[in-house]
Length: 548
Ligand SMILES: [Zn+2]
Image (cartoon, rainbow, N blue to C red; front, side):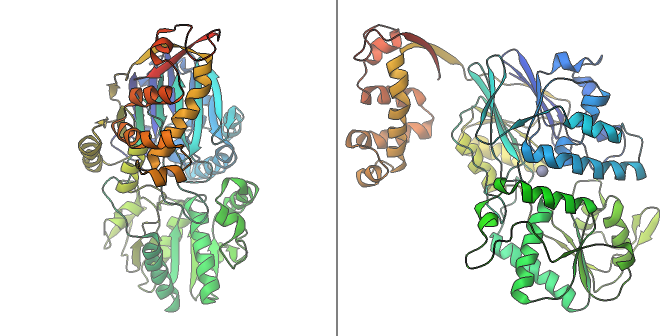
């Protein structure tokens, strides 16, 4: 298995990872870098093939979610570079990515830089090619190759992808969050045991305080600013964290009966909220049903007003959500320039700020004589960097790696020193080999290997049930009472403790042997392909593979 990192290698931005295994080649994400306006803006596709012809090089592209650093280069790749193969994404990604791309295209027109670009009409043409995925659904991609999407808990429709070719498999996390929030459940992925897990590592060294504490201090900062007559600027991507923060502010405003106006600058946010309402089924139950004792919030946002440019110098407090999210142009930058000198005001940075952006400089504490658009600005307002990001922290990353139990891991979408810390941690605490290639690096990952065995149809029917029994029993940690309560029978429960141990060691062979015993099957005969396996010796033999 070979991995070529075209983007997000020891960096956050332009996610794009190419994996070749089982004789096929796949691309995970096709993003752009928000910190660059030159040729580094998009992945260097010439590393794939200097002469183009990408349709014959790449068998399929998978997009994990609608953020620009994961989908921003896709129209360029399909419409300018000429890739015409299949592109897979979920329904919400297909619905919302065009809004993000159109918004970005406007910024691009104002600040073209020297990098490659795509035309506005390329967005629709590109998106028309998308093939849609549902969560927990397995799709046939090509011969002997299938993909399953699992919820990533990062933004609406964000998916963790499990791609299998023959006996080998890869899991690509995209961005994920293990902690549920107001509108999304946490990432939901099981014990997939792939040969390789490609995992994001944005917050590989942070362990966050509780969500309640973080939201409390953020709302306290907002309240303090508006109570003293100040204005609050919240630079956001129009879709994603913005909806979660709107729900948070909506709850806070209702609880405190604040009358301060909340504005949203991006007209696309209105369209995005309409899509969110249409895609309500992809959100968590809390948004659909509302918190206990209160009306369902949905994505109505009746309190939020559209922003008008003439409001910029209007006196009095207000809160403004403005795009883009890292102050790299557009309304958020214009408003920042006007409001930053006033000490009563507040800039709230709710998401990760990419290196090279103004948001990052603010996050790092730069205040005096900040050079913005060839003019210097003294930042006298307060700056609050809120950690309400929809990425897993170090604990969440380790938890997911342990849960998925890969043979090897490869970190992307992170900063080098933080990745090095997490890479060591994964190796030392979980015993899993971990790579962290830079952009342009190729990595050879050895496959865990599969041994084909002959087995009977009867065994194939009974085995999953018996393995399930063992797994349920092992959840009880071997305790008879707990195991029985979890639904295992007495025999399965007694095997539960051993099964728990094998699971921890990742010893599938032992687990299967025990399951076969429980199923009352002659393991030696079954493994050897003998016709005496089980009670019906006439069952047709079938080829099956077990990874060992
Ligand atoms: Zn993202």
